[in-house]
Image (cartoon, rainbow, N blue to C red):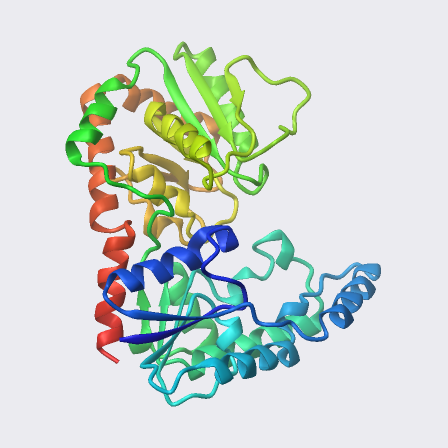
Length: 377
């Protein structure tokens, strides 16, 4: 198929949207489709709306200029003019740039959340002004009404589209995101990685750029409890330049920001994934973190929380374990301690985490599922 791939940014640049726009296009291309990139769209009158944001801030409200219908209609007009006549499908990893597109081709959206669920969930969507809430819902409704297929990365997001925007269930599908790293590891490679891990010291990996939302304080408390309980535990942190604490415990190693775009960064991340026993990310709010898929590609089980789309990605005793937001650090620590003491059970969980990556959380698996959905249109 010939796919018009619409984003407002440059999707060929892996640095945009954590690389998701890049990898989604790549996985569609790997299915034998011809991808026509339509991006770098101009946000006209952007300065006017940024000034409006400052005015709302002065009265204690948040304003999202990128939800203004006038801006999005302009983006849709720009994209429509660039769609080739022989295009079979219009595809966008998001609702905004295609919300007001009118075309003869079926329109497909693939994203991780709907606007209504983001309100008061992420910090940038808290205390929104009434016009942003009104416009945001209007735009999302128009995007979902006008698309032929709405694909989401989790069951939570899919059900939210049905619940908040009455999107017909027959055109709502779930396809988890893959891992935004290259993986040619085999089962034998993973077995070797698992066997090489220490049986005396537990290594936790906290990979995040937002300390509070990703649960940094809880990670520190879990590590303290494990060490005080007699299990030597080390925490490796990547993504955060300066830790928000006066005194860093000796068992905490902060690697700062590590870029995936450099060979040195890739080697460092490889090492962290391979030496760790668990990726721990007790998020307060999250849609579907791609880092879970990445961790599983190394046979690394995930410890997280039951919020947002996470329960669709992390299945208990399959590729990790999830706790409720109210669960105490002691509950986290007890689970880790029990599993770490049972080496055979740990190795089984680690191997099943890699199998989960191969079967469900790789871009190859996502591509196969997306292709079948597109062919059904």
